[in-house]
Length: 313
Ligand code: NAD
Picture (cartoon, rainbow, N blue to C red):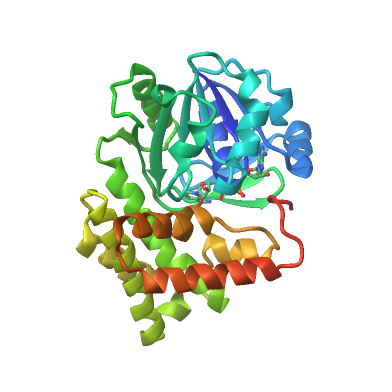
């Protein structure tokens, strides 16, 4: 398949690199000049559990210079950069390019729908982990899965083909009509752990070993899931609290991405996580006091970071 990845940081480089290894025609698009130059000159170094460390040759350029004409475009910028990135890459798309977002948070389809018809948009969620440890060098250790569907619920052969291509590349993927529940559950998980760690500047293990902080995380998750349920989404509340407990007991040294963003002087995805939940809560009349408090505190810290911008290494 001809596949373009918009936003070739940790996730975009991993997905693009693994697809390129399988022989697909992949083009990576990013704005991080150091990363672009490193991948152009030395190739993309992938380090995964399945195959260890190796270099993959894959074209990379800025969005406005894209060769394009892809069958599928996968959006992997942070949510706050989606509009700028897509506006720059739009001219390189075909009239029928399938546009897939696997970004965290809510509201991603609505953002894409400002640029392309909803019938061309697919949405999903992934638990595959990735870190850009240096320019041109991505690590992925641990297990994960991708679930996705067409945003309008329609059947799409191209989405099925993309799912097969991802699975063959080692990224286990299913087309799943209940993906909205999985998206909300991940938002609840992120709202609970990312915000508390970001505000307290601590690891997941620190939250797990402090009973009041642990209770706060569970309370935020319950608030978010109550909003999802009021919106008609069938979420698995006991399952989500079990996942939270598992993370609190096992991911002891993990610093969630929201904390990493603040520490690196970058804007966070708070608006796509707590911000979207609060807008839905207000529309549906669901009280969300803890989610709202953490939203305010993360935005306060974010406003204080010395220089906020896109990822830069
Ligand atoms: P990242 O910051 O590593 O990568 C984002 C990339 O987008 C950066 O390289 C940045 O330079 C690029 N970018 C910014 N503005 C751009 C523009 N205008 N045009 C093109 N590129 C632009 O982020 P990530 O960790 O890869 O996460 C991407 C998305 O996937 C986020 O929504 C995140 O929440 C989600 N996610 C991440 C993980 C993970 O383990 N990293 C797991 C699941 C979901």
